[in-house]
Amino acid sequence: MLLDVIHVAAQPDFALCLEFENGERRVFDMSAYMGQKPWSRLKANHTFQAAFVENGTVAWPGNIDIDPETLYELSVPLNDPVSVAQPA
Image (tube, rainbow, N blue to C red):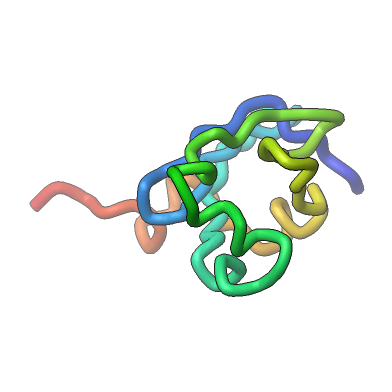
């Protein structure tokens, strides 16, 4: 099932906080992709922070995007205690 991304918030640690059309909120860690083309270009001048939603997925200036299936399948639910630091 293909789910569109409807909201994205880029984090300083190269994580993406995502909301999908089914209401799920998930976190996708992009740090492993940042050494690969075309995403390596996102490290310069805080370009990663310029993430936006386009055509149901996450995109950046310069015609860079990432597959929405990858975002969903490899992300973790935002309410997952492993993905979100809990206050002590």
